[in-house]
Every structure is written in C-alpha cells, then in structure tokens.
View 1 (tube, rainbow, N blue to C red):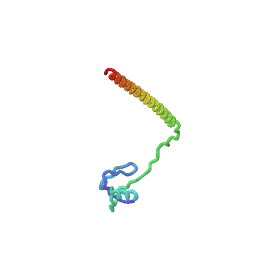
View 2 (cartoon, rainbow, N blue to C red; view 1 turned 135 degrees about the horizontal axis):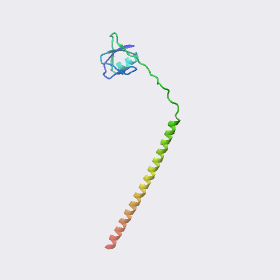
View 3 (spheres, helix red, strand yellow; view 1 turned 45 degrees about the vertical axis):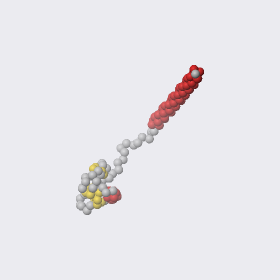
View 4 (tube, rainbow, N blue to C red; view 1 turned 90 degrees about the vertical axis):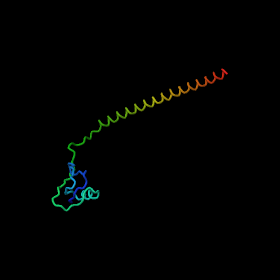
Length: 122
C-alpha cells in the first residue's frame, strides 16, 4: 500500500467509484498508486492517516443464461428478413434500370424521327 496525494480533479476509485478529492491523501494499492503518479494524477505522500481505498471485484448476482436457441432463432429470422429486403431492393433496381433504358430508347427514336422530319422538310 502507498500513500498518494490526489492532483487530478476527475479521478474515481474504489468498488463504488467514489470521486477522489484534490489535495486529499489516500492509501491505495502500490501498483495503482504508481500508475497514478506516472500519469500525473497523484504524487507520493508521507502524511499519516490517509483514507484507505478498497478495490473489489463484483461478481454477477444472477448466472448468465446459456439458452441461446431463442436468441439464435430471432437472429435467423432477422437474417431472413434482411435477405428478402435485399432481393426486393435488387428487383426494384433492375426495374428502374429497365425503365430508364426504355425511356432512353424512346428519346433516341424521337430524336431520329425529328432529324428525319427536319431533313425531309428541306
């Protein structure tokens, strides 16, 4: 354990992420204290009676469900809906491309007919 004086105003520590006060001395784990000193967030202190910080690891209160079949079936359904939507989008894109090609052909035919009519009038 090492005593450190906090320099950073936005430093949180402990199991409950308590905000550490600037200028206050805390008794922290040596590895954590070294890291804070290296980062310029704290400096080592010789003062007596620093507030002890406890670092704990919390365990989950309820076990994680291992039943993934429901989730997998939802994922499969979503994937199928995505495929259907992609197929519909591709069909619509082809339909629009065909309509554009037909419109361009009509425009070219109209230009050719206009050119022929203009030539015939002369």
